[in-house]
Structures are given as structure tokens and as C-alpha cells.
Length: 284
Image (cartoon, rainbow, N blue to C red; front, side):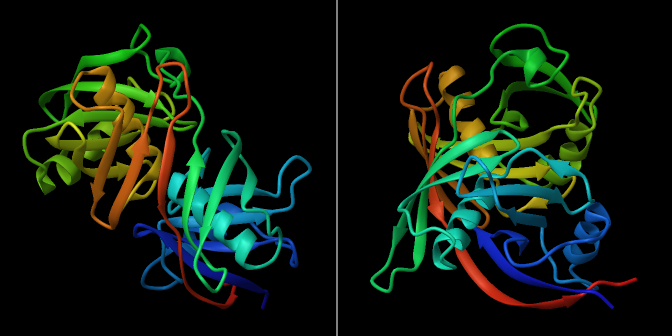
């Protein structure tokens, strides 16, 4: 029976099983392995699986799988944890790291404690993609702001943003299970989104503070979504609801998001936590 060494980490409760290929080879069906290890009853448990590979253009390359085995382009909480792994495990001791992702090479600044262990990471998430066709959605225009969408029989007003992966943001008067669990799956699979989409539901507390819950493409509701929080900041600015720097309160913790300029990148700062590690026997 084949075995893999893994590390369980989370960023604001958005948890993944991390597997480094710097010192081991994975000769298996990766999508099937992601489904297996993500199972919270019969596997390790997580919102998905993230592989940490060597890279020819960066300190490491991140490959991400959702809990259903589908491969995603990016994960904001996940890339912070990749940076923590790379630094804490001595792959690179640079305080500014480059991580290759499906959305390009990102720059991350790690913040360490007195024992030189990474606790916080600030990520340059790059420029948001606002062209409807490139997000992708079938909605016309750039940007796609406050457009009508039928969500499980409700008419929503949505703003769509890509942060390397697609997001559909809906501002609501009050967050509830009915929005996230009831409407979220309908939005994810709506025909306007050819690659499916992550659905964020947002309650504005003040111009600098929001509450957010997310129905993630391929994983269902998660405790946090870093790229989603970035998309919410952009959507808040575009729709005139928030300022350019906001605190996003998620079920798993808080993230600080900043979009200083319309034509500039989005910055995300948040925690990265290692929970445990071990050896997992792959089921044949």
C-alpha cells in the first residue's frame, strides 16, 4: 500500500491537506486522491488538497484541488499556507517569497514570531479581472456590477470579479444559511458561469468592515475564502459600498484586504496555521 507524507494547515479555517513533492513522488490519480483525503469521515479531512512542487520560476509551485477532485486555479488562504510551509520547512528562508500558481507567480511577505515561525502572510494577489468574458461569465461589459441574476427563484444583483478564479458577489441585508446553503449552489452552477463560480454573500457593517460567507465551487461552504474576500473588496469599491481597505469577517477569522488603486493589485493579509502532520496510506 502506497504512503504519502502530509501536513494539515489552514488559513482562517479554510483547511487543506498539503503534500510536498520536494522529497516524495506521487504516482497516483491526483483527483481521486484529493477526494479521498478531503473526506472528513474516511480521510484526513479538508476543503481540498494542495500540492507543493518545485518550480523553475519561483520558490515553489502550488497545485490546488477542491474536495470534489476538480482542479482550481488559485486559493488565497491556501497560498499563504504554502508560503508558511516553504519558509518553516527550510525550502527557502527568504522573507519575500515567490509562489507559482495557476493564476501566475505571486509575491508573498511572511511575518514570523520570535522563534522564526510564520504566523502572518501578506500576499500581492495581482490585479482583479473585471472583463466579463475573461472572468468568465456570459454577462457583457467591464466591469460586471449590480447585474440581475436569478438565484433559486430570487432576483439577485451581483458583481463578478476574477482573482485568478471566478467570483460572484451578492450584497445582502443580513447573512443567513438560507442565502449561502440555499442560493449558493444555484449560483455556482448557473449557466451564466461556464466554469462554475464561487458565490460570496456579504453584509456591510460599515464602509471599512463587512461580514462574508462563501459557497465555494467544488467544496460547498467553507470557513473562509481568501480570493473571495479580495473579490468582495473590489466589488465593494465598484458598487460604492466600501472603502478601499476593509476588514472581512469570515466564519474562520478575519482578513485585511486592500485595493489601493483601480488599475493596481489587491493585497491580502491573514494568518497561516499548521495543525498537524503525518503519513497517510492511499486506498487501492
